[in-house]
Length: 249
Image 1: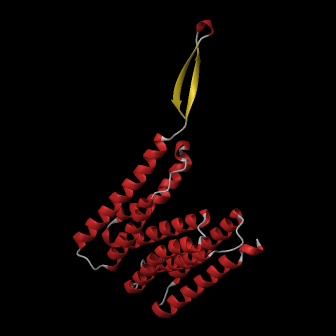
Image 2: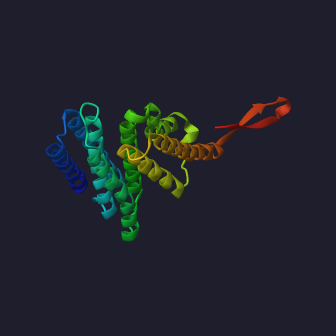
């Protein structure tokens, strides 16, 4: 455990530094501090556990980029929480989000360039994407309607359903399309958060993003259903014969 402590600890310190900077520049309030600290602690504790589980000696180059992105996303979460009780500078929230989205492309490039891609890095990258989409959907829903929360909740609903249905616990082959869809959600939500488009265009963009998300998750569900295991059921028959029926597992 000693070998894996520095990365998450540095991440937590960086989180406090970012929250302090936001407090000094935009006057981060109590809700923002609470959410920012809570999300930072959860993120870095999960990272420490992941490093220990995978037996990693520390963070690789791409992991450091992902951790930086996670820190920025926690800052976005803090500003979003503050927006419910006081005016939040949209420019600051959008700036943090844009940097986080850019780094989403950088960490993958670094992993390939340094040949340090790992299952932990891929999982961390996916979870940071999901959290950013959730936070942005909460912020955007205040002006566009609660239906937008479906964009942010989709990933977490999928995880819950996989725990409840055994046939959904299989492994889905990786698809680049999933990364494209996730990036699209982040870009669309950021543009809507910036409030630079007419309202009807914002609704259209959000609806299109939600449709892409539904198609992506729907395809994964269909693949898992088609690949679900089956088990034979043997029914006893007279004269020592048996009828074998194939039943879904």
